[in-house]
Amino acid sequence: AVSVITHPRLAAAARRRAAALGVGLAALGALALAHGPRRELLALGAVGVGVGGLYTLARARAGARSVPAQLAAIAGISLLAPTAWLLVAGPTERWPLAGVWSFLAFGGSVPYVRERVRRRRLGETRLAERLRGGAVALAWQALALGGASAAAAAGLVHPLAPAAFVPGAVKTALGIARPERRPDVRRIGYLETAIASVFALLAGVGLALAP
Image (cartoon, rainbow, N blue to C red):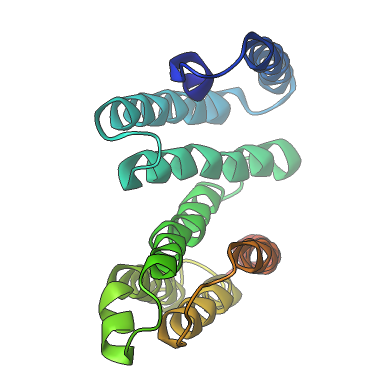
């Protein structure tokens, strides 16, 4: 909604579609509150409002394609995971972790994709240059996998839960290290979709299982 309202070049038809989508989502939200765990859903809604405010601020100050705006957008999308969890399984013990896991997994795609796309302007580079350029993406994956593994070692989650980050970490390490002149953007998108699907399966099962 923020994107549509603040983007000056969007046509009126796009605004009408966004308004219709907003009304539909509001109706679904009302149904969820009527039949779901109200307290937890309201808490998620409050978090969503805060994230939306951060996105609006980041978009106004740094632009829609900036890293802060993209991360804020992914944080908002990540709230769909705990929302779906609440509506399907109810407020189980680990439902808030669905949002944390989702943000750690999908947020890591921001520095990774940006670095791969940046190489289209550079041509072929040396391994040291590739690793230096992808340092943020590699560090993100290390923190996500390390944090999830620490949670499993502490008995907070099942060991399968941190395994959900392994495909993304391997993809990032290989994608950053391999030499390339002009990365295929479509292939990057297809691979991201496949990795996201594997993550969703492993994370859903891993977080649902008792530690």
